[in-house]
Length: 279
Figure 1 (cartoon, rainbow, N blue to C red):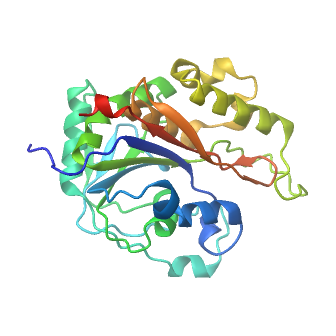
Figure 2 (cartoon, rainbow, N blue to C red; figure 1 turned 120 degrees about the vertical axis):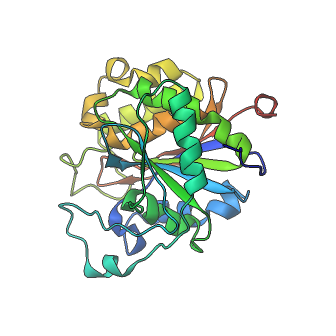
């Protein structure tokens, strides 16, 4: 397959996508951050975007390949207001990127990498993207995560996808820096933080900024509050993919932090690869 030619990108991102209702109300600091994306955070025009959402779980890596992305209202047990179903994000798909992702992952040693020619974008992808890129004019391809695999597997998946940056592809992993939906503190004051959540969030920041990728990959053994911060790792694995794609020498930067209900950290990170390594 012919590689895509475009402006090189030397950054990948892990963003906390917030609740499904972010477009309507709540999490105002996170919303402000995402709306300021192109003005403050990332002003390049990517050829396309590869997004890794924790809301698409498959047994084997799968990418969607469609001409136009449908808007999936996958709110599960969440009682979403009817107004949520009025939102659309009809962005173009990226079939060429889907094939390239399949090629790179297969070459890395992953035996089965599937292409889904029907799936659109789940709310973990389209909700933040609607704030970041409201025009919905950048081709998007989504990659699934594997819950039967560990963090190192997803980090290595990211490493295999690193060449995409040279081809003008922006890699974004939306999730949540802490994500325990069973331990909300409903009476928490604005930006008040439960001690266990604050400790994990701070540990993660220090590990990322110090370049301790191995610790981040082995977070369950390295941080006592890890299992409480992420009872299931679906909202954490997108970080590992984005981090792996940035490379071992990446410089991590905290680009946002806010809290909701005392336990949900919306910390978000930029991973910058030294320019000499992608030339």
